[in-house]
Image (tube, rainbow, N blue to C red; front, side):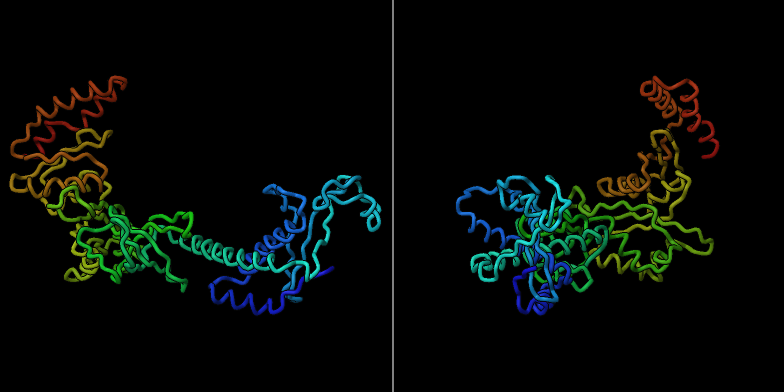
Length: 418
């Protein structure tokens, strides 16, 4: 079989592999694809009488790269026919039967169609070099894309490069020794307390990797994601990493609807170890552990609360730092609750512009109404509940409605309150 020599092929593959930080197999694949394009250029020059080539015309050609002999061959899969109408795709039965008497029309054979070393041509070589550069870039982007896709949902180190409109463009490191990749931090994913200056470094949460049309993979990162808070606590609290303490839920408002309200997070934690205080483990001695998280989030307020399987207890804890007198599960099926607090705790329970109760509702999954315990009318609320159930659950059975009403019994509530 003939071969077109590529002197220094081994050394070239090694050098490209090192300079582009690509495995040798990826470099070889890029070279094979480039040589195919170079051969296409050669064949187009040879077939002057053919003015049009379909997109799939050269699909039956392939390159066999021989690294040991430092060269390559061109092979073509051709169909056996009686009469040749296209020499690139067909071969005559008589010709094949000279070496394989059992061959039949319609069979396929692989034929060595490697041109002479000198015939391949300077233009084909130039085409090969140009395509190789493009293929190497494509291979590099593909590997980077695959690498970062595996890192979705993790936290990475980033450095501010520049600004485009309202987005910050960052240089992001995977931590595996690969070159930095540009990522976008959109305005909605930024923190109001952050200061974004060129060269500033901080941690970001990798939300999504999507394939860009020109510049390779596009990384969308966030400083506002709840995942960043989870990572920071897991990194700072050994009990979380050791799975002694677990994070059950997180509710975060990194960009409040009003500029008068600062960012705030509520995080619910739990443990199966009787001797471990999950809240204390997250806060640390004199607040040392939680302070590291707060500092990374530029002063964001963080409430660490104890999760409970009992909804009433969980809701009361979620409204911390307010003191709750009583939680009434008005409609468990629709997860609605009334929370009774003292008058001096009303504003604290609700929070500035409703932020505290809003986050507590997100954390627990319950619709929470804060009520002044001293002015709460049990009978009136009971009547409202009955009317609501009658209007909204007409398809439910009477027994179902009675069960829902029994959950909130004003007499029991009054006795317990007393």
